[in-house]
Length: 70
Image: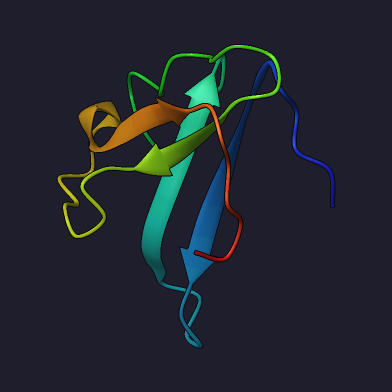
């Protein structure tokens, strides 16, 4: 699966297909309205703080040194 850098979204579903978490960015009108703003080329977004989830774009920040899986 490829994610679009200009805007896209990710939904995490439980075994009953209920959305337990989601994020959207850029020009996507998916999970969050407004979506997380686009970040600089080569950067990523991360939830910050990690344990905060208010279902808004303010839960996310730009990350210059992505560490997938951490």
